[in-house]
Length: 414
Image 1 (tube, rainbow, N blue to C red):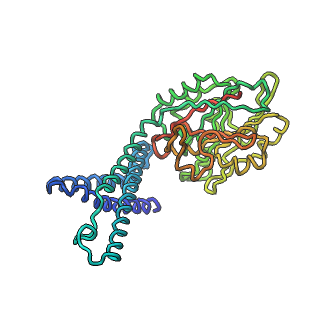
Image 2: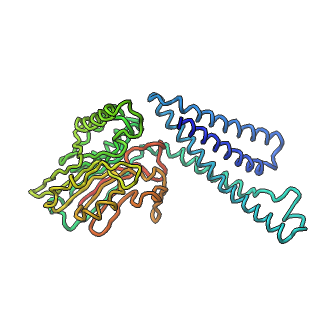
Image 3: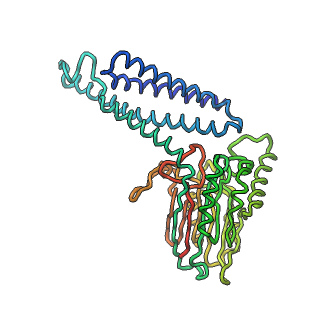
């Protein structure tokens, strides 16, 4: 019922946007022949109706067999929606200009005829119409281009210095992975190439900070052999993210949902990963020790669960001079870690994916997700504590990346 209502709302919004954009098309085609305008208008409406029709088919494509097709349809339609919305912003500015110009003319020049007020009223701006169509087209083209970036793994090297790090651990290389989202992956060869890049770094320790799946443990099955290749001298450790609990799909019984999570836990053990469930382990090197803490998902955002128990995981680590925390959601850092656990030196998180859309160039780092998460990608420091937020290895929803590439983080303790 809710899906049908959502579908109906989206279709109505699409039609309203199409009607608004159609007015701009009429403006820019004023100089064309009658035949040319007829072809342009009929083509526009034919494509628009086709897109709406394809979108209307989504409720009939919920079978897992159609998952990839459904994802691309949804992402393309959503991209078109935002592209049209952006174009309409320019058209709205033009309409506001026309309204102000009309009101000014009526108020100050009530009897004026000619350029200010004509019999047909104030015409639309051809420039703003073209600008709106160009901006919308550029956004949509960018989103389509982003499909090719979803396996374009970027290795980010992050040297970190800590005064209290035991000397034996200086130079240790840690690789952080996060947000694999196995259910979204479709190219095992590309994924294997990403794992090759991880292994080429020869890490001492590999840490995975949650969201191995979108919803169901079986999503991992095609990639078990690939992920089992992840090995490091000090081990491979993991935590759970919000998607790993199966909260976003319907289960026939609570028991089936619980069994799904148990299987996901067992799969990680089978792959050689040590899943930390509100607990810590001690890492030893050269006769010296540090603590690695891992908790279940804990978020400061109301719509995400708080399964994590840092108090339980932290207990017993007080005696170790250096502590690393794996916690999926970066909002945990400000909400609980910094205020109550000031001796946790390094926290590692993921979750945001950098929204898979943004700009990262020298001097400029921006993504819409920053208006929701204060810490959303890269390194953050407060006093002696540090947080690193991985941009994600996989993807979900939008099957691509624009500006924010999938990440393999190489942390070197120096």
